[in-house]
Amino acid sequence: MDAEMMKMLAAALAVAVGVTGPALGEGWIAAKTMESVSRNPEMSGKMFTNMLIGMAFVESLGVYCFLVALIILFVM
Amino acid sequence: MTAETLDTEIIEIESGETTAGEEAGEGSEVQLAAEPAFVIGGFTVTNTMTATVFTTLLIIILAVAVRRKAGVIPSRLQVLFEEAFMMVYTQLDEAVGEKKARFIAPLIVTLFLFILISNQFLLLPFVGSIVTEHGNLFRTPTTDYSLTIALAIITMGAAHLIAFVASPLGHIGNYIRVKPLWQVITGKRPIGELFNAGIEIFLGVLEMLGDCIRVISLGTRLFGNLLAGEVVIIVISGLMFFTQFLIPIPFIILASFAGLIQAFVFTLLSTLFISNNLVHATGHHE
Image (cartoon, rainbow over the protein chains, first blue to last red):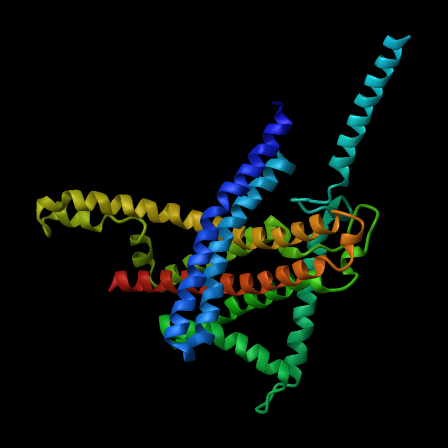
């Protein structure tokens, strides 16, 4: 196993492992929003924007992992 | 005879591998750092810098156009700008009061408009294909880490400066928390609270560390999201010959949407940091 292969493996692992947490988080946010919208339908517009902002926060964690993978592949 | 052919075959394979590797290195257009566009008198101008100047000019033209026709009966563009201003202003008004909100809001709205327009640079047709002798002339400004980290430093610097001007002692007291320790030493508090005073000092150090991390996370969030969108489009359109035409369109929509959301998130976070610092500093002082 040479260095190039290790790099590829490391990049793949960084994305594959790192993305699971944000994926769970985003799913949870969506599920909770659905729950509250079904309870209180007239608030759905405000909840949707809040959901998107919350998701953007969580998604940035996944993007950090993506960046690390890119740095491993193209910069190191 | 056979040995010689085998040798040549091996050499061919090796040389073939090396050229393939070089091609993969050169052909991949994924670039983390900004490429130089042209050189003026020994100063290298990168393609994100030209795009930043372009965006700034666009905002100035928009602002002048809106200002000239501004009136009691607003035009459509004026409504858009007023909406962007009020979005920030109402939040600040609730947190720090009207007088300070009027002072802080223009800075954040400027950041918002700049990030909003520069994130949509991808949607301008043919602009990404203009090529000079060094490389592309334009590239989405926010995919340059220098720009996003500069925006983050400006935001956090403003947050500290505003809080410091409002209440110098209160703001410094949030980071160097020696007040409880002093009270224990002078006898205003019982000696049993010495441990709590030590923890307060440690919390102050943590707060300093947290502010450094905030700068990095604020800049990296914007940079990462925008770069991820571009890289995905590059990878998808470089996959096969026929994936260049219609397949990237959903990803372009997704990237543009992510840019919009990230502009909102950056604005929200900078509003939060500035008002939080201000409230904390003045509240601590009183």
